[in-house]
Image (cartoon, rainbow, N blue to C red; front, side, top):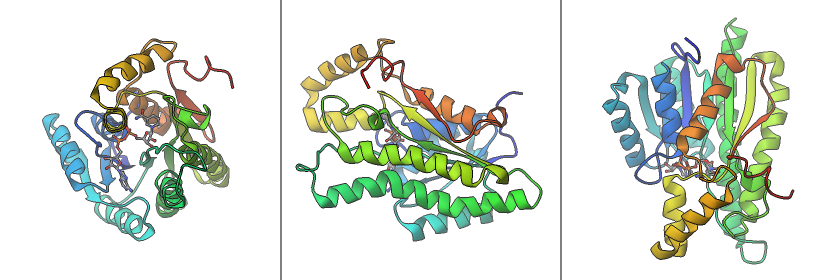
Length: 276
Ligand SMILES: NC(=O)c1ccc[n+]([C@@H]2O[C@H](COP(=O)([O-])OP(=O)(O)OC[C@H]3O[C@@H](n4cnc5c(N)ncnc54)[C@H](O)[C@@H]3O)[C@@H](O)[C@H]2O)c1
């Protein structure tokens, strides 16, 4: 069977969803479980994890799901979650660094505190989870098995100077850094059976976007803005969490065994249609 994850353990950060429906992390967790993986989900919000657990149960996938609360920006918290996954499931084959989110602001309008929070959320979280998962993957490789695959989540916000009419300088900078970090880490572990790649989503219609836009713009503007976002994409519509999850699944799979240190843009043609 292609894209078969039976016997594999996937560690997914931000495996809940910020609101009702399907965010990228939740969809990725469920998709990997459908393909046979044992998924260990972490999230700062325990209720979001319970919600993903319920989605798993509705598809009779409870046997493929375990989770623990974890703040992806705290080294101690990540270390404890990785140790628990390793103890309970015995290995980690796939790491999906999904935690992230944007806050608007340029260097004048953004406070130092918010800048640091953005870098922590989008970049430190990737570093910390790699820091603690890589030794597990290395151990597996040195014991004669396969090492692992890491998929980090970037954003077209790293390539376009503004999204949705708002400048988000810290988000752009941190997501660009995720791509560079991924390539660098991929080269460091290329001979150790570990692949590292980045999925770069475009305008996705996920609960996080809807909640953030609803908060920032108000309900009336939201419908208009969603229509504008749809119209701005060459394919005529935003993507959804499943589009991101499918790209993550491919890069995490054995079928992608010769693919490392690269990026997969999932944006319906958005970046290609804009001036650089
Ligand atoms: N939604 C989009 O349109 C879009 C576009 C481009 C990139 N992305 C990226 O995709 C990823 C997922 O975005 P999403 O909108 O699908 O969100 P999501 O629905 O996957 O939710 C993210 C989850 O992360 C959790 N979380 C937040 N802070 C955390 C922390 N410190 N530690 C652990 N968990 C934490 C939240 O509780 C939430 O459950 C992010 O990296 C985002 O930047 C999203």
